[in-house]
Length: 421
Ligand code: C2E
Ligand code: MG
Ligand code: MG
Image (cartoon, rainbow, N blue to C red):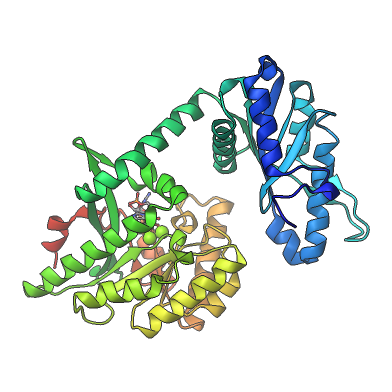
């Protein structure tokens, strides 16, 4: 399906046409009377896997037809790309559109006898809030992205809070290049511990941004940099600094430990990625196995294959690789069976807090099973986010001997970490 041509089957129009219409409404005195919405259909990957791509398209068409039937005669709907759409409609249809976003049951006997529940994540805007179509699109998309990660809702209206967030994102984007050049980013090191003897056995490199005397945490800037792709430059900046630190420590005669560097999935589309990582590490003539790469898992099939190729290549080059935040996302079993990980990093959301509640007992069961499954697969486990002695004792009792967390150490500046070596 070509996203840039009118899609009569879905009753939609081309993206360009819809943007022109959006601009026309925004510049007219009628702007007050209209809303815009950007939607991302929920669960299309699962639908495609379950029913096949052709049937997946039928489901998508049926959902968009539902939406189309709710936006009135002068409403328009167009595809942005993939499973993302946007629509412009008179605000008296708002409640109907919201109901469709919350979910409808589609009857498609040619796909399945059972009804299919489809919903979406959506960002709404009152058209009078912005002057031009690109700004409106940006605002709706931002509201949609925020809605996606906000608990208990799947949709949001663009408002003052989101406007502040957008301004902040713009500021981060503008400051980033100068900040990299001025080396405002610093690598902090968080020790990894071997639980038998509480012995330092490695570290994770975590970046901090120092700007105007203030320290910014990754959560304040990484999501922004992931959206505009600049995270790739930051990842290589961190890798370079870690290699440089390790080289310096070796030259000073210190006993170094393996340091892991986080690699954002945004890097996966880069065909030079493997060579670039390997060459950066080789440039510093570091002993094999002293730099490790941490990646989180991925849900899309394309990036799964890219991830698999990368990890195979890195392992062949003698670079250990860990699957970060395991248990927090999709945790697909094929990620474990088809990719040669050296380590699984069990996400802190699975670490029992020790309150004896049924949910906590389930965490214990899960973590124990992951550790024994990983061992059978020949992969070592490290648990993140260990904050108490009893958690550390529990981990030892289930044969998970590697841990990282505030109970042992918080991430610390380079100078403090090197005094431990
Ligand atoms: P991550 O890779 O899962 O790193 C572990 C995070 O958990 C770190 O947060 C660490 O400070 C925190 N943590 C460690 N122990 C504990 C604990 O006991 N309790 C709690 N509550 N938290 C603990 P931080 O430094 O804020 O980093 C957050 C995330 O930002 C990282 O999660 C990683 O995904 C990302 N990140 C950090 N530096 C980089 C980088 O250079 N490149 C990329 N791509 N991502 C990075
Ligand atoms: Mg990590
Ligand atoms: Mg992690």
